[in-house]
Image (cartoon, rainbow, N blue to C red; front, side):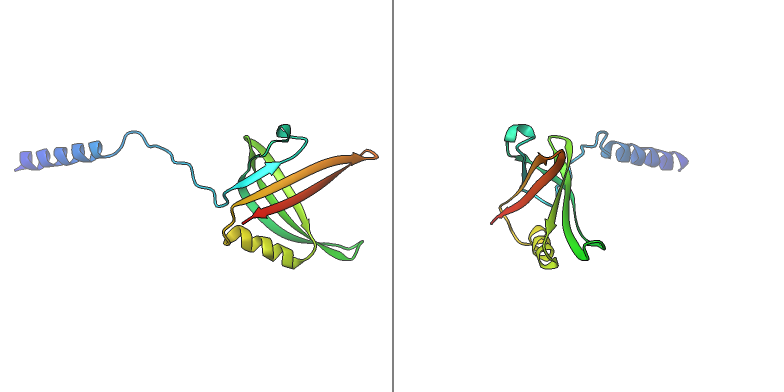
Length: 134
């Protein structure tokens, strides 16, 4: 009887050991945000390249000296394995809600993130735009 139980246990262990896969294949996680592209005259030969979005944050800041709120959308991601960050200033909270609805639900074809930097009197300025194609 002990031999039968021992044989059954050995067979069960060998079956479960061979049933498990020895090599796991990692599958890339799909991005929540698709079809984002990036373009800048100063980078990537002025080509439109894929922008892999890591996260998008929406924020509001109060500037006491100017006595006004500044609303911002920050898009963090990677372009050709280089970290990039796009900061877009909006005029009011309604524009933030508009972009939040677009990024989280409404079907869009493509989002173009455009950033241009220029220098005036040794001070750098950045022009940023977000274009959504439906």
